[in-house]
Length: 275
Image 1: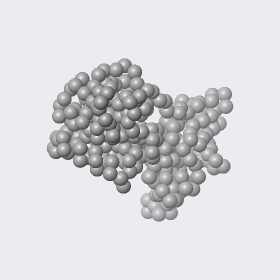
Image 2 (image 1 turned 135 degrees about the vertical axis):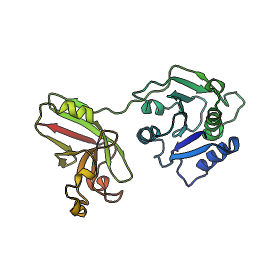
Image 3 (image 1 turned 135 degrees about the horizontal axis):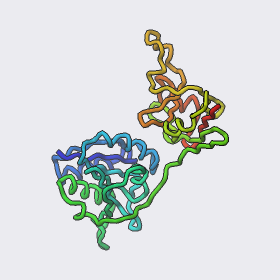
């Protein structure tokens, strides 16, 4: 059974997600539809890329992924398909796929040419363009039938952390805040290990607060499991599943997690000083 995943900034209140699913099922009632998320902040490509990049790798080869974020139609912008490792990724040519595949070169890129005639009317990109193209691919159709190969697309770059060697410092920033209020930075483990060579200690600084230890997981914060409840609310830094520096509150939530207690927002700086 073919799999089509849906990721969008539509939310679940309005009709748009249901319309996409209805259109898919009307074209192929046997398709397995999987929601990744529809709670992306409106037009937020950085947030989308972080969530989707960490989710799609668990799907089987051959899956088709629709990314309807910042996807409202206008004729001056292409809609594209990336082919990578036998799977297909459909999105507007807004730079989103370049963020997701910043370290992987796709096998091929296609401009979707469905509804591209001068008299075609597109009222909703997701149902009028993405869904027919995705179902075609899910049915085993060739991408060349619904698109033409292209070489260049819009590219965006993640904000990169800066390693200031003379000051023995990494300067990063908050990239994403998750559902538990955890603060994810753009500082990865690799740059930390390079910058920390020869240093005895380090301090992570943000706002007027600081931490001096990085754990390998959330549960490593607890050193005595018989007294686990005493660790609730403890602040910590970890390298998360994506090997990115994360500021967290043990068993925190959106209301009382790191975002609430530290007061950091996306784009604010985080510093690591080595000495």
